[in-house]
Image 1: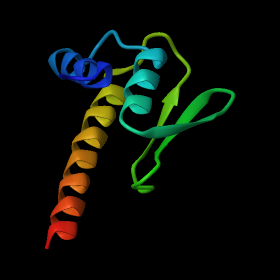
Image 2 (image 1 turned 90 degrees about the vertical axis):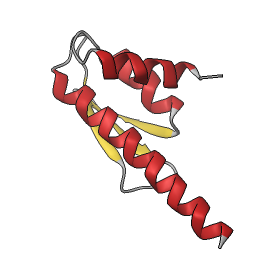
Image 3 (image 1 turned 30 degrees about the vertical axis):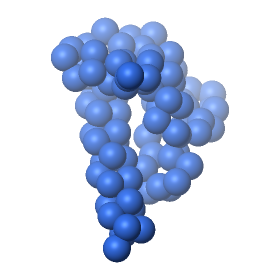
Length: 90
């Protein structure tokens, strides 16, 4: 069964416009990122793979680049998790 974050990601893959900061907050936290709050932006860093990070403006409707970055980062996260699992198995 898909989590809320996974369902949100699939919706974002279908349409990249119309998403806001709260949607991306839900997505990133659901995939294991932690959030550092700033005045104009939030910075998300993955707890296991610290090289995965994103900055999100505090806006209710964000440009599609923010969603494209979120999709790219979650895809990269899955790739890194798969590689780490393979390395542990061998």
